[in-house]
Image (cartoon, rainbow, N blue to C red; front, side, top):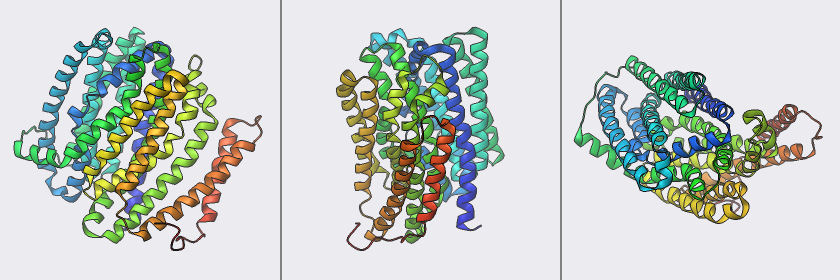
Length: 474
């Protein structure tokens, strides 16, 4: 199969899987917000974010390494999966023990101890599921991965709906979620068995140590990524913001989180090919890298523009009345999408080059800057200040990641910059459209026209030169 067909097939399957995964997640969150209201949704968001802060004890930074490993050695599936099972079962037990101890350390967490521990089980199950998905991705069986993600989200949604409609309480909804998670995890494993994985558990100490040695840089980076992704809701709660305000901010961040699926699927479709090319054909690797960076840039810019321009409409459509303050946060946070998309692609390039230890610097810098900005900006600017902290930290993360890849040759960066300028020009046309379209227009029609002009501009610019003159890029 040709390279283009492989990328296309992988991308299509990734799209379907991420639509189910991210779309199902977004559907769950806006239904939960509508069912429970901003205050209960704020309590749920705090407990879930708190539990997720400890998720590194389950993840261990191994998923990308597993994808790379099985992409290079697909014949070792039957040996790999039992070892992964043994490692993840043990790490989940350690995670739940550490979480149980941590809730005793502050009055704020003790108040929500039961909810935190219940959602900790959900977090552990979700992370184990992601490890199984990483193996499927490495096998380039993205269609099976897509099906497993669909079944997983369907189980979570069905469980949450059953729990809510039976009890009309947050606690009942969480119980339903746990049941749905167990069903989805079981379905994913059955699909993996059909690919040749045995139903077995094996503890292999030497293998675990070798895997963790490779993933150690990603473990450290994951700690900071995890803090970066979840500390905002926890920090806002500890700063004394009302549960409703925490719910408003969490609602806007869930919309941003849903958008993270797009760079995941774009990078995921290319990553197995990047991994093999990095080891065997650097010229091919650089062509794929330019393609990846161009793709994520072209996707990020129009999404950020649209989300910022239509934030009140988006919040009203999705969350309904009572969540209006979330629009102010979304209008600001939407600009972080550009950094989120490009940073995800840059991290994929670093890992494909076996440079995962370098990701620590970017993750640490982003987490520290985000925390400092939250503490400094939130008291003065409220939820908009908290959203601005995300934008600032993504910018810092981008600068660091670009610095980590500065070893690529000048020709590579000329191609990247040239493609980036084309995307920016198309975004400028889209921005002008959103600015000057009459306010009386239907928002859907406005978006359709703006995205159409963005796409047309990109097509026109394809005929422009693909290289900058020497001296204009490095």
